[in-house]
Image 1 (tube, rainbow, N blue to C red):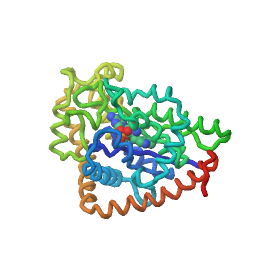
Image 2 (spheres, rainbow, N blue to C red):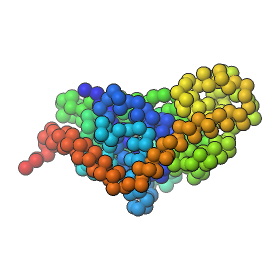
Image 3 (cartoon, rainbow, N blue to C red):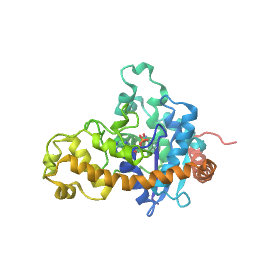
Length: 332
Ligand code: TYM
């Protein structure tokens, strides 16, 4: 049986990278798979946060999922902390994950910065919890952006380690689904850096909550070079900022980059940016409006999350009972 699990952290607002790299693919995949989409609030407390802001962000991310087109009836949509199995399986996996595997994780090194001894244990163990998220539901496929590839390899390694230790094929080894043209959307200010929720400059990203004027301003101010758009992908790939804008255009219009170049080669970026603004506003505008409408009824969002947690919890409990029996933990 194929089952999808994926999630986003409710830290700050979601941005165009989250949408093009993941959320939009989820919307397409829900037709063919049984899907579980999670708001990973326990991951969000691995970095500095304010409780009231976090609570609101959880609802905002939920609203973004639904506004993008995720059907909360057909799919299971919930927040991670509402299902205790995530923390329970995290501990079991922590007891089967060698430190050497975690020491290789590049995202921890980036996030912990220079003062690694001050970094918290939760940030270090972040990918173990992520493995627990996925395998708690025995998910077979995980649609994510390019930056999560290493974490998914670790999830496969942890599942494999568990299976070997207890001598059975209990967990499936989940396959990453890194789909579409925009698997790594870059910052609008620096084409060598990933578009990220934590970038200090708000001009580096387009937030899903930005209004049309803000989207237009950010795209017009996006860094480019003075050359017109090139003819070939080879030339384009030598120019990171240009490549990023063409990639965004390709993803938003559901085309390949070469087809965008075929249409716009030789144009100046000022003109191209105008076309990109139109496409971005046409795609994101209705989504933002729907998100705001949904956020007007927080009780309804909470009801959706509660119902999702009940459905997710039933699957999780079954897995955890089996895991406890396999591991030798007594269920009196
Ligand atoms: P998060 O919240 O950082 O990102 C959510 C999703 O958005 C993708 N993404 C991007 N894709 C393209 N370009 C970008 N600039 C960009 N930035 C982010 C991410 O790849 C991700 O798919 N660790 C995960 C959350 C998580 C999870 C899981 C995911 C926790 N448990 C289990 C899958 C399965 C994360 O930090 O996502």
